[in-house]
Structures are given as C-alpha cells and as structure tokens.
Image (cartoon, rainbow, N blue to C red):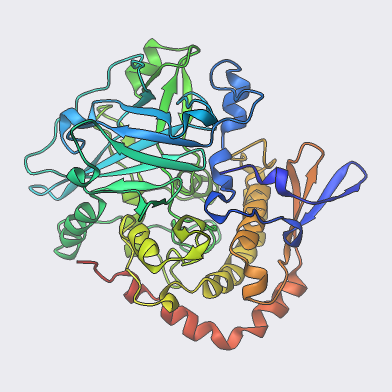
Length: 469
C-alpha cells in the first residue's frame, strides 16, 4: 500500500493540515492504488533498525516476484524458503528486509482425522540468500489438506513457480489473465476451506464465538463493516525476524532468545489490525491455533479469521465488492477476478455485479463504521496506533483509513454524498485528530434508509454461508 499521506491535499491551519475525504486525490492507475495497511508498523521497524529494514532515500521497486519452492504443500516445501526477486530488475532490486517490499507466507493445515487446524509460516528470503536460521520442518498429519496465503507490503506481488514446476501444481492463484491481485495470492485455499467447512457442518470442527466487545456489541470480525476498507481480507498476521544484516528467520521463541538483535518484521494487514489492535482495544480475542514451527505457541491466521467471520459475523456481512482495487482489470470491474479473490477467502462467488455492488458496500460502511468509531472513541484513542507514521492512535488510524477507503471506492459518487469523516494531520502527515460530522452522517444515512432492508438481505448471513463447491 502506498502512503496516502502523500496524496492528501490540505490547507495549513496553525501548523496542522485539515483533511477531509473529498480532498484525497485518486491515483490514475487503479491496479496500483494506494493500500494504506501495508504501512502499518513500517515506521516503527525503520526507527528501531535504521540498517537494512529502513527504506532507502530512493523510492523502492514496488513490484516484486516470489518464487515458490517445489512441492509447496508438503512438509519439505513448507520449510523451503520462498525467494523474493524483482519482477522487473530495471526498476530496482527487491529485498525482504526492506519493509516497503516485504512478502509474507502463511499456511493452514487441516487434519482430516481430528478435524483440527494448525498453522505454519514459511519463510521468505532474498533470491540467492540463506536464512539466518533454517526453517523448522513441520510434521504434517496423514492426509493433511494445506492452504497457503500470501501478503505483500508493496504494490504488486507476482508468484513464479520454481524451475520444472508450475503454479497449477499447487493450485496457486495470483489474479486473472495476467492481472495480479496486488498484495494477495493463495495456493489450494478453496480445498482447505471446503474441508474445514464440511467439518464445521458435521460438528467436528468448533468455531469459537467471536464474543462480546466492551460496547456490548459482537466483537468485530474481518467481515465487519466497522473493520473493512477498500481491499478487505488481504495480507496476513504473519511475523518474521530480521537481523541487523537483513537475514531472515522464523518468529519462534527459540530464535528470539538466540538472536536478540533481530527484530520483528510484520505484514501490516486487515488481519493484523483486527487480531492485534482492534480486538484487544475492544476487549476481544482472535481465534488462534498451534504454530507448527514453534511448539507450544498459538497464533492467529487469515484462514481462522475468515472461517470465524463466515460463521459468526452478524448481518450485514462485508464481502469483497467488485470495486475492490485488487479485483479490477485495467481499472474496470471484473466478475471473474472478484470471484477468484473471494474463493481464496472462503466467500460466496457472485453471479452478477449486483452481488458485488460497491455502492451497497459504501452504504453499509457509512451505516456502521463512523458510529462505532465514535461510540468507542475513548478506548480506541487510548490504544496504540498500528502505524505511528500514519496516525497517533488507533482511533485516528481507523478514521484516516476510512477516509482513504471512501475515496478509493469512489463512494462519494456512488452514494452521492461527501464523506462525513475527516482527519487533521500535522506537518509530518500524521493524523492527530478525527471528526465525524454526525449531522451530515445522519442525513446521508436517512436518505438511503429505504434501501437498508434490501442491502441487508443482499449481505445476509445465509448468503455468506453459501458453499462454493
């Protein structure tokens, strides 16, 4: 995700810049659109380690390729490091330790004998480099069904098979007809979700309740309109360790104890935002499963987030819309690409563009997100920001994220109303306060109140729980 702070048009007022949604400038190339969440934690990581993890003064190459090892769904394949390289070397190199280019991998393993799920995060290294510590070789159960997901901190991540292999061997999906999703990709995800959902239906796999938040409402999931932005369900809650010299290792208790100079490298994401920030701020806990690389440790995962959201998120349920920048092809909506993206996240496929109506998505965001932000302003303001370079609290971070999403989805035109949410940023571009114009918000929501029943029916729990066989 590019830095929205460079896209904000503002008016100077006593040392602060007052910015509203209508002043965010849309980029000319939708497939390369700004993706704000990828900047989460990058400022903190760069400050903690000004060596290899700090971005250089030159703009880093935003488009990298990840080379998938042979047999990636096997124990050997999972423990073989993925290799990061430039998609177009003429634009510069790619380095995993550069937080603007870091790629991440996470696998979920379904055991058909016990109907249980475990998690493993394969390591990523620079092409031609070796890991600081060889990855742990996981022990997979007999007949294991493995799904793999990818996240990225730059713009466009391309998957490439190892020599003699093909992306089809592991049923990897990177986009549609040469148009990559951007920061997201997956391998064998539908098969994993099919097995997990069958176990849930049979009562063999128990999905924990989301719980109740401090505001008395259900804890938010990654399909809550309080959480989602313009490109929901992308990226991973994966962490790696990076040494001062830029060498990578898995984020395990043993590696942290033996390599104290290594620091965490994270994939800032919708998933991490929910699991590590919004959940604890709201008195909630994410669903976690055993980490096969770190015995005794429990970790959150994209697969767990999506399964729990599918089963527990009350209506209205947010599903990837056709206007999601990652599902566009040459700037235009693509039902095929949108459905491929949804399949990787256990979402029902659409039969028409009505199923992915972006205008409805915008209306639901307006009905839910600003009000819940305001209702929980005290708790969100008291909680740490996901990115100190973007906002000074979780509250201002969520507000400026809403501002960016409203612009990038072109909600103003789709609902015929300017954004009632605005943020104030300082001279460094950090959001330091946020305002919700409640009078304007109420007028907007009231204007399309007659559509709410139809909108909620289209975003119903029953539809969300459709199978995709």
